Image (cartoon, rainbow, N blue to C red):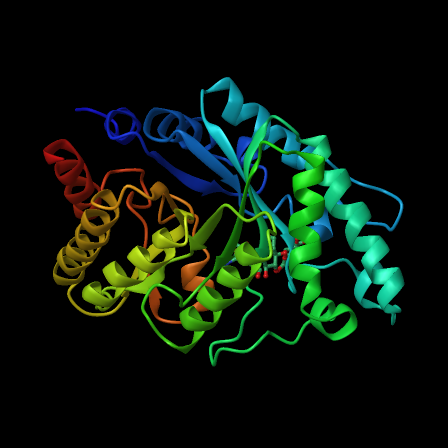
Amino acid sequence: DVPLRVLAEKLNIHIGFAAGNNFWSLPDAEKYMEVAKREFNILTPGNQMKWDTIHPERNRYNFEPAEKHVEFALKNDMIVHGHTLVWHNQLPGWLTGQEWSKEELLNILEDHVKTVVSHFRGRVKIWDVVNEAVSDSGTYRESIWYRTIGPEYIEKALIWAKEADPDAILIYNDYNIEEINAKSNFVYNMIKNLREKGVPIDGIGFQMHIDYRGINYESFKKNLERFAELGLQIYITEMDVRIPLGGSVEYYLKKQAEVYRRIFEICLDNPAVRAIQFWGFTDKYSWVPGFFKGYGKALIFDENYNPKPCYFAIRELMEEK
Ligand code: G3I
């Protein structure tokens, strides 16, 4: 049986996962790492490059947890996808606990982006520079960044990241932008404007947290095409396909496999798509059951690290391409 990463290499894309916190100390760490290095060639640290971990005090950075992810990836011939430099969530108390002036916050952000990106320069190939800056209704999201700095925090972050590592691929990442809708229209126009202004932005990340009913595939395909026409690389960054935990599991697993297959098919047919990543890989460790009550089993390996129907659907499709 050919692992996914071998098939991906032939198709000239990357396939990968977001790694759980300190996965090397899980009770089943050995199994976890065995599957990870066998199947994947790109890794995102799921939490440990976020502000609350990596920048716990104003004048102190904590690179160690992220470093271990990076070391594991590079040792196993994976590239690293950094997540994330600017987000409204998982921010440290020192940052959110007081009001900053625009100038202060710009200084803090500049220091953060430059310090983190240059620390990992040459080792982190792709950065989610800005994550989830847009609301579902298609406006800038209210956040400490937007409120204090205004929308220009986005271009500033991109420019500083580029300065710190000119070779890194810089992307904007968000959820619910897979189809053509108010949110993806806003993101599209935002990125189009940035590119017209010469702001360095290389790619777009579609998180792809979806469920067994799938999405509008025609709309997804068209959406990929319009972003690709802007000259952007496309990344599927956090895919999972949740199913209800009650009811006929067998039925839902089949539906789920079909959704994975359709999404992969559209992605593999568009040369702008550079990587497809899942938000985890075993159903044992997934954010889904904790967040979507009554749902789970969203990933491609089950709780015992056995490949699921969706795994086989993806593999079969990649073999055919
Ligand atoms: O670190 C604390 C720990 O000290 C405490 O004992 C424990 C008790 O709840 O919480 C731990 O923090 C948790 C953290 O993950 C680290 O594991 C937070 O409660 C929990 O809310 C946090 O969840 C993360 C979530 O982002 C936060 O928004 C998930 O692990 C992470 O997978 C998830 O990832 C996001 C992406 O970054 C962006 N896109 C959506 C995706 C899924 O929500």
